[in-house]
Image (cartoon, rainbow, N blue to C red; front, side, top):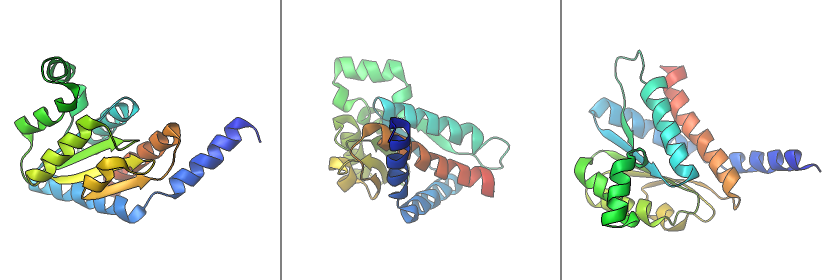
Length: 184
């Protein structure tokens, strides 16, 4: 089998593992956050940071533009001055949680994206978000790592290959976003 066909076959398997009931639950959380005026904070590292940024852009524009109610959603990995200041002066593991301490309120949603589920900065932020009464959502891969066990709602892609985990996470984010773009 040629590589593109093999990759596609394995990607279809990874996408087929997505728990659609959990995605529907996440969509409901986003509806409730928007209806209640709550904020949604999203974070990740590397490719997962890119996924977080892409998802937030889709929600801010695609799922909000021209709508009577809009999402209050931020990607915490997008504030490079803040992220690098905390990383340099305090430590990278605290760069996300310190931002949550400024902005998060009980009832807000914290969504962490991590292929390994073990990134210390998103894990520490998850612990903090849980401690103040945020709803916590994780998109994880591999075995879910520490993050999967900490999140109230974990959408887990049990795939070892980081590329296919990231592909599946993008699809999950599009499922959430397009539910607001195409059904409302």
